[in-house]
Amino acid sequence: MAWDVRIVVTSTNPTKVEATRIAAEEVLGTEVEIETVEVVSGVSEMPMSKEECRRGARVRVENGLRLFPGSITVGHEGGVVEVHGDWYLFGATYASDGRRHSWGGETLVYMPMEIVERLKGGLVELGDVIDELTRESGTKRRGGAIAYLSKNRITRQELFVLPAKQALVRWLI
Image (tube, rainbow, N blue to C red; front, side):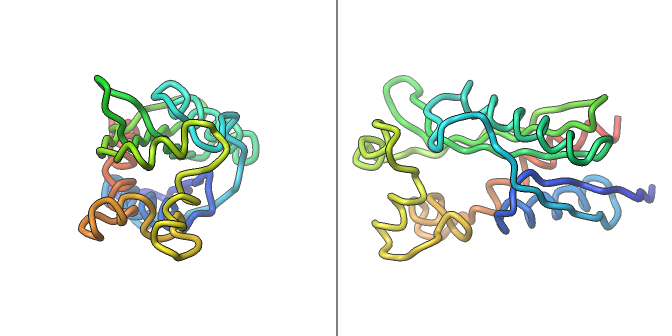
């Protein structure tokens, strides 16, 4: 089935944009037009709960739909969450065209407590901590925390592809 589809990604972060493009083309079975827009999430710079991450992804999409009504709009929001006393890198993906909506799978990757402690005050974002640990700048626009934690065995882009695919299945049904 061929589609003529415009996908709006509510971020200009290259890893999120490319992951969404890959997911959309694989799920929808056609090349897609990608628009990017930087919108506010309505949540803290470093979300610290599943609810806050989900709210951030949904608000990003709602804000994107105001600018691109009727387009399939995808929002990704990352943060850290506590699960049974351990802390995890967490991500939520939400997609909507204003009529239909869907969530994609939620990522959980173990986070060392020394990193979590630096985030708890809400004064620093995970990307800044990873920049300091790697002595690089702008890591969240490339490998991000997952590259650091997995010793580059998992890419940030990979983390966003599967949840985007899961969310976009809604447009096949």
